Amino acid sequence: MRYLILISFLFFSCSPLQKYESTVEKWEDEVKKLEDLNKKETYSNQAILFIGSSSIRRWNSIKEDLSHFEPIKRGYGGARYSDLIHFTERLVSPHNVKAVAIFVANDITGGTKDLSPKEVLNLAKFIVKKIRKSHENTPIFFIETTPTSKRWKVWNKISKANDLIKDFTSKKRDLFYINTRSYYIKSNGMPNDELFTEDKLHLNRAGYKIWGKIIKENFDKNLDIKN
Image (cartoon, rainbow, N blue to C red; front, side, top):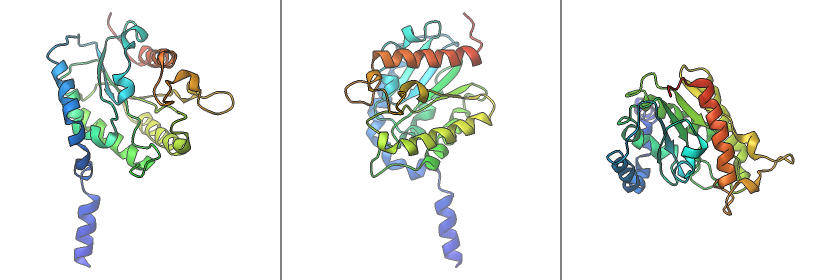
């Protein structure tokens, strides 16, 4: 009985870093490329650091869409919370910024390795904890995972994960949640494919323009940016 208790303790006290360690190697080269950008790019301490998945990486109009804000892009294609937890400190700690924005959308896709909404929440909490090591009071914005036709069959689970993260941020100082779902769903309750590329997953130019407007309004409301 004592051995069973010990095994249970070791399992449930296991760090998320250990549990998802096997997901790391795939993205190492991508993260190194992002780290190399730190040697080439310059920015002020009023900049906003964006980390997460391909919607960040592909946002080529980000400076235009966010106008008076100064964005730093550090997203990589296919990012999940389950691998981002390993890279958060490397992507965030080198930067002296006004805020950090996070968009991750690949932990629940309808695949066999999907996480539960509660697991997604726990990983989001862990990422906040890691950011706080170097940015104790920096505002952190979680951008809601967008409803898409590509992953509509699991939207109920994605939506649940969104709601859990939103509830978490509402109870913490310097944490914010950016709601976007209503802008990407038509009156018939289905995703608006006109705002996405042909893969029905990634935003097109019109989709990014709306995204930028929503995000910028949230920054305007919650950040005191010195121009």
